[in-house]
Amino acid sequence: MLQLTALLLIAQAQVPLALPPPRGYVNDFAGVLDAASVAHMEAVITEVRQKTRGEIAVVTLADIGDRPAADVALEIGRRWGVGVKG
Image 1 (cartoon, rainbow, N blue to C red):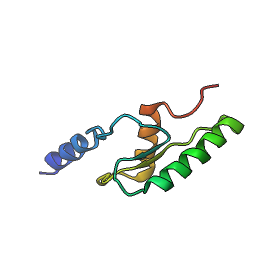
Image 2 (cartoon, helix red, strand yellow):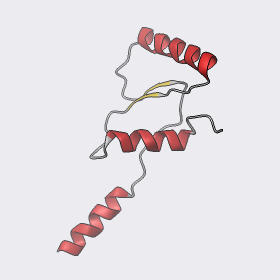
Image 3 (spheres, rainbow, N blue to C red):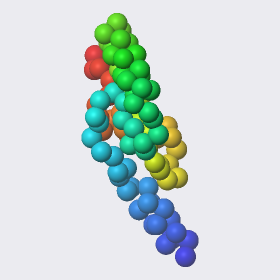
Image 4 (cartoon, helix red, strand yellow):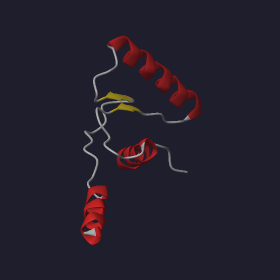
């Protein structure tokens, strides 16, 4: 029984995050942001990028399951290529 439980946990951990492609700097996949907030965030992020070359992505998801938020953020950053190399 213990081995079966361990196998189920391993299989669960390997299921990739269902993540649509990015639409811009602000990706409200959960539908919780109003248009004015999205526009303001896009403007601020654009200014940060122009002045510092820093990259910011805002993502809302309806559900991340039992995954730690930091792990989800790292996975999104890696899959979308957030950040400038070098």
